[in-house]
Length: 463
Image (cartoon, rainbow, N blue to C red; front, side, top):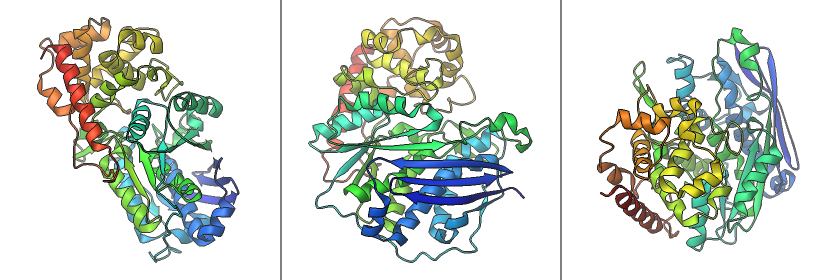
């Protein structure tokens, strides 16, 4: 029986570290916090409460090792922190986040490892309120266009905020990651910058190549879900009661429907409104009673975000989005998607300044573009928008005279172009599907940006 075990856990003033074993393999992970002292937090909020928080950080970070298809998961030195509410949350997260992995590995009936609960505790109340004399806001910043827009909207709404940037081993050199994010933060109104470093030797490892007996074709991780718990020590240390994400409405729609199970496979499920509600409710009910965890951009689609960047052209060149080779590899689905939409909504000179070449003409990108416009079985398993959004972006590029292999592909596949109804589908602001606190002057601003984007598209396409 294949078992995934948490074999050790330690904490020091600025570090959390744990090790795991599975299928005879051992891995190690450590979290480093620049502006958190865990010993001080234990003195303020009790060691018992902080231990449960450590457990959740470790448990949702270690979920990446479910890629090894364990039948059982044991939590070792933290096993007594397992509760019924945690098990329920874990199961819901597994079904959503791991849909793509199950599809890629043809495991439609794998429901994840059985969580050992021999030492589990009951769901006795163990919550605290963040000590904060006034509401404080912490904005996640990954360095991309979503972070740019969210921080600008906070500033325009008169909301003071700090920023959080975290680096991860899977993305390469940590110093380089923070350097790139800092280049965007230099253009923001962030009053304080907080950092987390995550060192992990599992995702960058050659386990797929050197352990073929495991029968696994791909690795995945619920990174977004893990960050929801990893950020909470910062809320406790600095009094943040608003934890602001920059996840858009486009992430609510999946990449494909899997006929075998009838479910929708969504690479971005961790950014979906469903996941956001699930995590927000869990945090307030079981951990921090006065913390709001929400996405500032959830009412709007990617199309509105890209079109809104025209107001910040001097900042856009400081963004980056590539997950292969930062800032841009120019050969992956994410780079191709951002290029397409920057070309559709921003001036050509801005696009050239960022990319330096025409990504429509790069052969390696043709599959991504085919997937984006619905000519393959599913859209790219990356953080990209819906098929109709990509078709609209191609139509905008066509109207502006862009050329290249991908433009020829689009013209041949859709000689009539896309329908005007696409504007009404994507250039709106949903007044209901969000968790933005009512006291923040945000939703009306999003509505105005959606209206301006609609006007830009109508003018560009002559509709």
